[in-house]
Amino acid sequence: MPTTKIMVIRHAERPNGAQGVMPDGTPNPEALTAIGWQRADALVGLFAPPGGHFTDPHLRTPQAIYASGIAHHSNSLRPQQTVTPLAEKLGLRLNTDFPKGDEAALVRAATIIGGVVLIAWEHEAIPDIAQFILGGNQGIPQHWPGNRFDLVWVFDRPDQSGMWSFTQVPQRLLPGDSADPIPLG
Image (cartoon, rainbow, N blue to C red):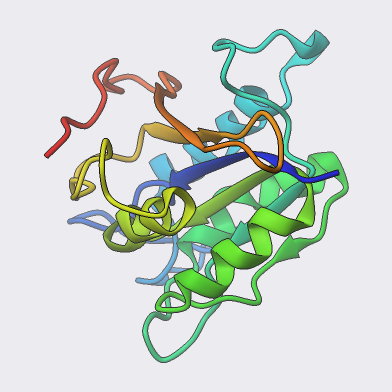
């Protein structure tokens, strides 16, 4: 079965004056903040809702989950930490084979694995991921703002020969989350 849906999220909240912490409470500047851990836990209900009742019809439960791996471009643990609770809930192996900077290979793998895919990544490279999926940059935001952690970019393809469509879905999981998409252009 071909890949029919790719959902892309930015990692959850990072240290920006707050302290990043590991699951055991140990300080780590490459880890999520306490609010980031709250988002990571809330994402379980967004992508694997009780009774299968999604808050938005564009969302689905992933059958494969990717997060950027650690490499010389980035030591951030945040993408992996953001989706670890969901991967554990679903019994899925978290694929971290592709580091930041290897978005083309990531998209090649994600588009052929089949079914529904979720990708957690660093915000600077998410527009590049979108361009690789769509084959160009038309109709997508060219920049993911540094202060947005609350969106899902959804790419749908009804069949293997079809074109991908693009939709932005607000997560609306935590206080302060915006209902607005990122503006195009």
